[in-house]
Amino acid sequence: MLAGVFGPELNVKRIVVPYTASVNCALGLVAADIMHEYSVIRTLPAPSPAEAINNIYAPIIKRALAELASEGFGKNSIRLRRSIDLRYGRQVHEVTTPVNSSIPIDENGVRRLIDDFEQLYERKYGRGSAFRGAGMEMTTFRLTASGLMPRPRLEKKALAGPSSSAAKVGDREVFIPARNGIGRAGIYDFLGLEPGNVVEGPAVIHTPITTIAIQERQIGRMDEFQNIVIEF
Image 1 (tube, one colour):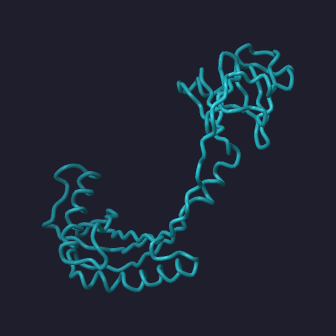
Image 2 (tube, rainbow, N blue to C red; image 1 turned 30 degrees about the vertical axis):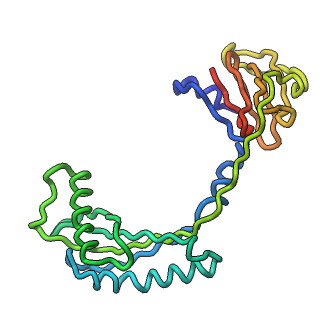
Image 3 (tube, rainbow, N blue to C red; image 1 turned 120 degrees about the vertical axis):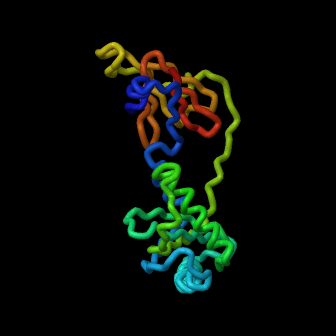
């Protein structure tokens, strides 16, 4: 209802009101991947033997795979991401560093972990701030296990002409901010609109789940996904 008012104040040129407007967050939630987060706090010098790191990760990976399997995810629908918190000796500043290597990690993977930590550290605290001579340690071993959900398919609809007269149900007086007063506005039924139709403001579009206000000197155009695109 208010997007058409604050949009110009933010200097945007186009506003998209989704077809799923008032339930858009819920749509994202049901389509989002299932994620489980695990962590083990243990202090190890860095670098440490790959075997020591694998011994920490083995039980939590086993647990993660079992939990996702119990939720119905097959092997091809599971993704595992590891990361480790590292810091320099006698420091409190930790940097969470992704483990960019195979499972289980090997010695080359451990070396890459150390290199990645130093790059991230300097990116965060400035070039030259990393000092390997101070020694390093790993403090927290993290695992993010994701079960991949199928994504909803958005189907395009054929575009019709710009006329929205078939969807107009009348006129009524509404408050028009640009005039700082009451004025006449066209009232439209969203269900009567077709992709390609244009509604000129001031106008109000009633949908089954929300109300869209098109301000004066704005137009609302239904796109091929039935979103209302407000332009001004």
